[in-house]
Image (cartoon, rainbow, N blue to C red; front, side, top):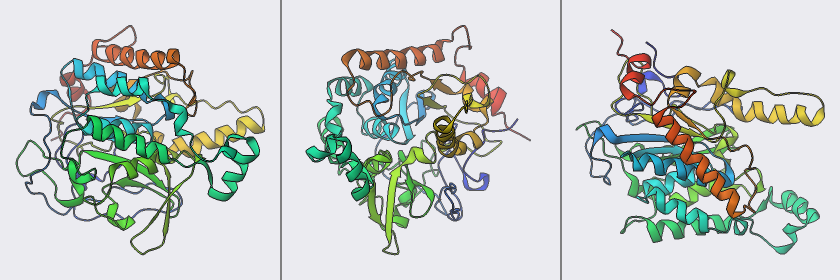
Length: 392
């Protein structure tokens, strides 16, 4: 049997659940032109003293969370069901809204608290900036001057406030808090590659996807100094809506960072083990769209210039995910939440709309675990036998 298609070279991956502890001889060079590079890896593994992670391997779960702007409460609803069923979040990868949920989850914040916070948050405050950016001419001027309308300052401050108020005490706010400890001795990677949270950002200057904190050094930083809220702010920079984040790369040149979903909104294979190695615990994807019927649900109807432009944007932003997902493997372990009724930038969400997204997230997770008229109940042993049986 084949393993899931992965963005990680098989020779560079070890350990983990459906995903593994990330390791390898050396970092692979990124490809230009907007293509995504393989993840960089350490050249050896050793034990360390990171933060705690779930003790019961049978209830560990790695999560890959799709971005979706204001739809994050749907992710929280799904995670809440997983926690109620006894699953404990081990590691999380995400972009945009998925990175926000991932930052909260890996800080030790229960999903029930995440739901409460997201219900009470005034999303309109995320649309920050001077008064004139609320007018149509002002929006255009802000895009011309700053490449985006809203500053994104409030989003960063809001996330920092939630992590401080609800996260585990004694945290530094950097990725040093999120060092990962594998339950199997000797399989914990060292240095910048041993973290429970992976955030994707699109580096426009380099024309590639970045995995942070794994590639912190390429951006002139280290995991121990890289703040989680700054990384999430970069990943949530919806192009033109939020101003891009500007850092310096290791050479001191500008690095312009925007929403990770621009290149990969659903890096479902990020934690996968090498082909032929049986996962020790599952990796669940949580996707903010309906379950695909074929070709991962893509059907662009082109009838004129507007639909043509939309199809071009969808192809550019979704090609990487579709290229790297073997749908039979990915669909079997993905919770699909149909959130099409809400736009990612609809920051004026009503209480009813939030409740609808939350309930859709809970129902999707319940149907995934228990089964419904479209799918059988989740069975990890059956999944391994079908997709991840050890090859001889």
